[in-house]
Amino acid sequence: MLYRTLGSTGLRVSEIAFGCGAVGGLMTDNDRPDEHLEVIRRALERGFTHFDTAYSYGDGKSEANLGRVLGELGPEISLSTKVRLGPERPLDLKAATIDSVERSLERLRRDSVDIIQLHDHVAPADGDWPHFSLSPGEVLGPGGVVEGFEELRERGRVRFFGFTGLGQSDSLHELVESGRFHTVQVYFNLLNPTAAFSAPEGFEAQDFGLLLNKAADRGMGTFAIRVLARGALTPSPRTGEKEPRALSPGSGYFRDIERARKLDWLAEESGGPINQAAFRFALMRPEFSTVLAGCASVGEVDETAVCSGAAGLSDEALTRLKALWKSDFA
Image 1: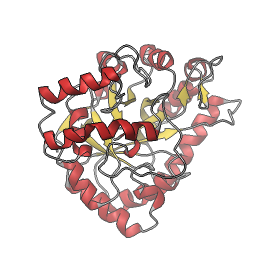
Image 2: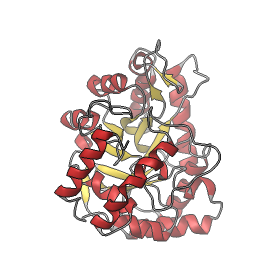
Image 3: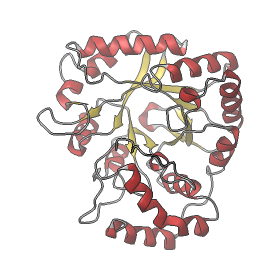
Image 4: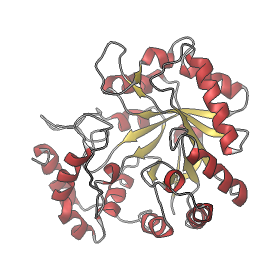
């Protein structure tokens, strides 16, 4: 495993971090403590040193399971969790933020975490964003989320602040430009690379407007998220009767599966399955501090860990990818 510095925080983290969300499902859908222990122990053996969770992953199950395993193993790692205030929209955002973090710390069995992150989408208050969202003013303004983070830092409960980069693109850029956050989780994958590459004219999916580049230029630590496009970029993506809600406009899960099927050549060209090509693509970007991976088994830990230090995609593959982005996989 190779390591990178998480922006200006000075934290040294594994360039692949362990995500404890619903995509991997280990900490949310698996009720076998022995398997939790086995997989996390293997991740530590393979050099994973950063773990990322959230209250919203299984309504606290992920935090509780991770806290139990880390308490048993006692590793030296860095840890991040998240606050999602949700559609109830509490009147006192600052107080609700503080309360949410305090309850997360109880589940994690820790006195503090390295990074606390806002997990709600961010979009203008008068816009028509399809998800519940907080406005930039509610995040940054008096009595808002960041003031709650700042008080928690004064109490010694958190060290650094971050946010998940989902929402209206201009609003996400506003949070980056505010200078009040240390980290950002950036949506980036083979199907939508617009956080680092300029979007071609007519691009169907959301244009994140080089968000990664801007954040890195400002010294922020950056996490790559949704590298596998919620599972569309795997050899056997799950299909079912009900499509999961899209996290960003133009990136519906079934539409992403259609796009991904036009990348079968990439697995052959890169000498490994499409999911490994997806991780190698993200790791090519030096602006990323770390790439989040949800691993549900020892085998998935091993398959993902080998991507660290592996060669990036070839120039020929990148040229072919850019042509596909221009056509938006039509």
